[in-house]
Amino acid sequence: MKQVYMDHSATTATDPAVTQAMLPYFSEKYGNPSSLYTIGRQARRAIEEARQLVSDLIGAKKEEIIFTGSGTESDNLAIKGYALKNRAKGDHIITSSIEHHAVLNTCKYLEKNGFKVTYLPVSKDGIVNPHDVEKAITPQTILITIMHANNEIGTIQPIEEIGKIAKEKQIIFHTDAVQTAGKIPVNVDALGVSMLSISAHKLYGPKGVGALYLRKGTSIEPQLHGGGHERNIRSSTENVPGIVGFGKACELARERLPRESNLAALRDSLIRGVLEIKDSYLNGHPTKRLPNNANFRFSYIEGESMILNLDMKGVAASTGSACSSTSLEPSHVLMSIGLRPEEAHGSLRLTLGRENTQEDVDYVISVLPDIVNKLRMISPLAR
Image 1 (tube, rainbow, N blue to C red):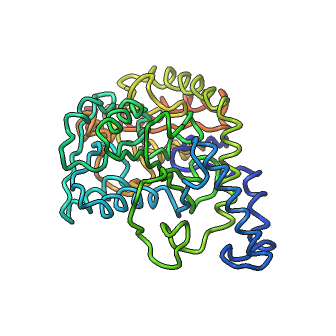
Image 2 (cartoon, helix red, strand yellow; image 1 turned 45 degrees about the vertical axis):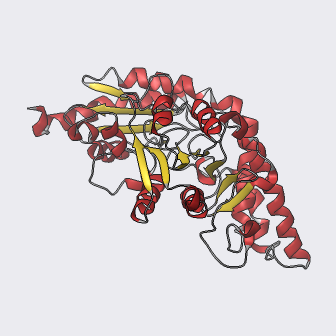
Image 3 (cartoon, rainbow, N blue to C red; image 1 turned 180 degrees about the horizontal axis):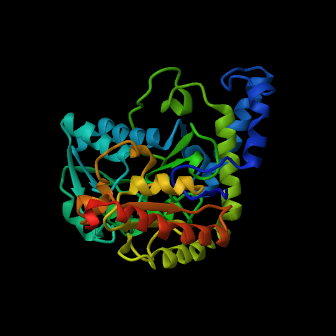
């Protein structure tokens, strides 16, 4: 059976060159990077080389990169860390209604601890209006956190415009760039952000390692207390193999970034083919979206059934965020763009990657109509 992986927004395969770069740090150069002897210094040197490679991908300075255990930890460290450190300056945070749960649940945690959070609406295409951001600012606003691109529907947000507003109002601005780094150009100065979160396993690196860009002069409260690693901001003995792999993945992503835009042609071919199915619709903006993201909804059927049937045909896909795949609740993102619960339940996310071809796209387009028709025949909603 043909195997087609189209869930690259959930995770990516570790690039063979990344795996190769990591291997020596498991069993040869395995020293603790805080140790003074040779294999410890080797590990420390490898971390600093990786830090440079990560910073190069996003146009940052090497010393502004803090390694973490994931994109989720990076979001938590940025939002909780800044809010708790700077509470004396204000207690108001602005975010959007379609953020990843790593941001939304962190904001909800802060609300329980006395902070006020404004959750901005989005358009039917899933775009935050910069004017809404500006209108939401109060004298107590200390932080704005808006994702660079949505992990479910792929919409790219007007981060540069929001960054200009934040700079003018002298408010710290954080963006979750987990879905954009390595897919589209990401430059912290052009975006106007003071903090930015990324994750290795979304760009063909290993799982279990992420990074937070922290602009020089931005002060945050550590969330882990221990030996004072990562400039006393993130204590824990560093995951040296993971960090080395992250660095290599960023190096490869930077080299291959011009080719990532080629995925847009495959994406558009996929969209055209799927929309030939009766009562199918594209979720998100038709053009202001990630080059690899296509998110659909189909009337009268449930997304989970589509996923299982596609899997039987060798196609790996999802209904939305992998982090909430066990939830029975409709996607908060799809509800935020105005869909009814039954519409949101009928969603399918197909996200392309480097190894996908037109043949893969054609295969999905060939098997999906029969799956949709079969599910509609047994659906009480279609009667």
